[in-house]
Length: 56
Image (cartoon, rainbow, N blue to C red; front, side, top):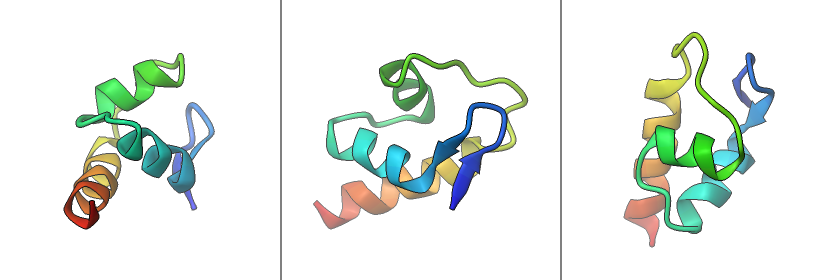
């Protein structure tokens, strides 16, 4: 699933960032060398990160 259309970020990318220690969408974007643009993906990215952290 595409999470961020602006930056072509997939769900698997966000999950990998969360597994790597990112705790916020902004940290995930930075770790991929990207910046949020429109911001509509932030809530979805947050939910994915929270899901990964809960599973850890």
